[in-house]
Each structure stands twice: as C-alpha cells, then as structure tokens.
Amino acid sequence: MNSTPAAGDTISNIDSRLKWRTLLLLALAELLAMAVWFSATAIIPALTEAWQLDDGGRAWLTMAVQIGFVVGTLTSAVFSLADRIPSRWFFASSALLAGLATALIPAVATGLTLALILRFLTGVFLAGVYPVGMKIMATWTKADRGLGIGLLVGALTLGSASPHLLNAFGGVSAWQPVMYLAAASAIVGGLVALLFVEEGPYRAKAPPFNLRLVGEILREKDTLLANIGYLGHMWELYAMWAWIPAFFLASFALVGIAPAWAAAATFAVIAVGGLGSLIAGQMADRFGRTAITITSLLVSGAISLLIGFFFGGNPILLVGLALIWGFAIVADSAQFSACVSELCIPAYTGTTLTLQTSLGFLLTLFTIRLIPMVQAFVGWEYAFMILAIGPVVGIWAMRVLRRSPAATKLAGGRR
Figure 1 (tube, rainbow, N blue to C red):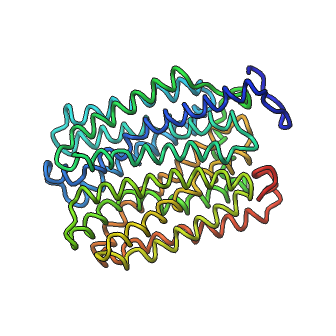
Figure 2 (tube, helix red, strand yellow):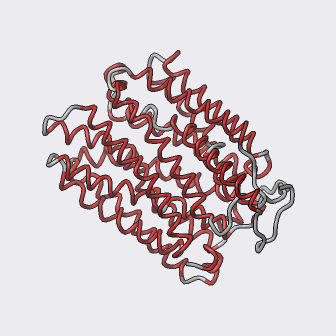
C-alpha cells in the first residue's frame, strides 16, 4: 500500500476489496458534502419572499458559491495544495468548514449580504472537496478510471440534487431546515472521509512547489483540448442546474401544478445525472473517452435547443425530456477529468484537476447570470437555447483530441 506500482501492475484481491470499500465511502462522503452547494438555490422562492430578492439577488445566491469555488480552486492550483496537503485531511476539513458556513446562514443571517459572504466561504471550502476527491479516486484506478471518477461525479450530482428533494418535502415554505440538513450532511461527509478514506496505491510522491506549473499545464496542447471540452460542458451544466427549478415553477404554474412538484421534478432531473455519469464511465472505459463525451454533448446540446418548445405544455412530456437532458448533461463530466488525469504528469494530478475545475466554474459565473437576462428578453421558450454554444465548442475540441497521438493515453488506448 505504501509503494506506487508500475503501470502494468495489478492490485491483489485483498486490496481490491479495500479499494472498492474506500471508493464507495469516498463517493458517499462526496455526496453528503456536496449537499451544501445548491442548498440556497433550492430555497430561492422562500428566500425571495423572506428577503424581498430581485433577479440579481436570486442569481447571486448561486453565483457566490461559484465565485468562492473559483477563488479556492485557483489558490489551490497556484500553490499545488491538492498535491502537497494529505488528501484525506484536506477533503475532511474542507467538508466540515463548508457545513459550518452553511449552518451559519439560518442561524445568523437576516438578509442577503451576510448570506452571500457565507455562500462565498462555502464555495472556497468546497474547493477542497470535489477536485481532491477526484485526485483520491485517481490514486485507486487505472483501467477503470472512467468508472471510478464517474462514480464520484455521480455522487456529486446526487449531493447537488438533494436540497431539491428536501425542498419538495417542506422546504418551499420553511427554508431553515433545508439549510441545517444540508450543513449536517456536509459535516457527516467530512467525518466519513476523515475516518475511512485514504489514498490508493497509484498515488505519486508529493511534488515540490512550482509557481510556473499552472502556465505549463495551460500550454500543453492535449490537456488544453480536454479542458476546452470541459469548458463547453460547463457552459451548459450549471446554468441548467441553477435555472431548471425556475423553469419548472413557471411552466407548472401555467397548468395549475403545485410548486412542490417543481422541486421534485428538479431533484429527479439533476439526480438522474448521477446514473448518467456512472453508465458513461463504464462505457468510456470500454469504448473511449472522446466517443462518449462527443455523444453526450450532442444529446444535451440538442435538448437545450428543444426543451423550451415544451414550456407550459404537458408536464409529463416536459419532465420526460428534461430527464434525458439531466442524464446526458452530466454523463460526460467525469470523462473530461479522467482525460486530464491520464494526460498530465502523475505527481501533479491534483493540481491539474483543480485547475480544470477552477476554469470551468469561472465560466459558469457568466452563464448562470446570462440565463435570466435572456429569459427576460425572449421568455423561457427560448432562454436555454444559448446553452447549445457550449456543446458545439466541446464537440470540436474532443474531435481534435481524438485525432491526436496523445489520445492513445486515454482509457488504455480507447479514444
């Protein structure tokens, strides 16, 4: 366990059992910790009434977390924290602090200003959860890395969806319990990581500090293409996640359906992405990462163009199409991370993954704010169409990467 095996080595049967027990517990810790991400987004209707929020205030409740996450991940990437701090302690302490920051909102916040500060800090702390979790996952996987990171992203997706489920069972009118439950979830996730999660046998020795590393990563062509594909994916993902609740609320109101059903539909649409991530991870290990990412981007981009035409119509058809969108929009996410972990220098896997997520979430700040502006101008029927730009760019980048000689490093040579 303390030595790093060569690429062709296999893990013993005993270690294999330890591996999957650890990875399942890591996924559980990730699921629990990420509950705080959309904890405020899920209760926007109640907060709007309590604090008299306008469109800008509602958007900032989500954007504050994104900004905090970007600040946290950029800081981590510049100083290579994800590769220099023991991963278990980094993950666990970050989850505990994210839970504390979330719990303080219902405890002490009486308006938007303090809530935004605490949401920003939540994002900063989550920078030690998501990318560090992917790094830990990479230390346990090689041939099955797509499945492993897919499992982790699936857990993240379920964790992000969970506040909407809480919302459906009473959070619409009582927002404080949603925040407290999400905070408790993150704290438990941190404790799970602290007690049961450790790095695997494929970990690399902690590297020396290298301030120029970020520039070197950004200049490497094949890693850059994988990151561009990821940016195309992120252009669409978080804007959809952030605004599909409002989309459902407005659509359901036109046909007389209660708001709780909009929360339930939102949970289902986001949560089904966990299944998409897991299935796509298995398929990518078998058929190739670029093939799966291109397919996922094609499906999700097409639905972003189509879903507005179902607004205000049959809710079964609307939710059915949205479920396909939720499945496809997350299916490729883990594979972009798997790509950069296979293309980068092993000792800097954590830093490379952290930089990728930082750039992706920086982009989401723009698209999350863009959607309500577009909606105010053209209505919900056409608001999501602008998200198709991301999949178009992502498909181009992954097609170019697929033709690169370096693509043989992906998924054991399966492009």
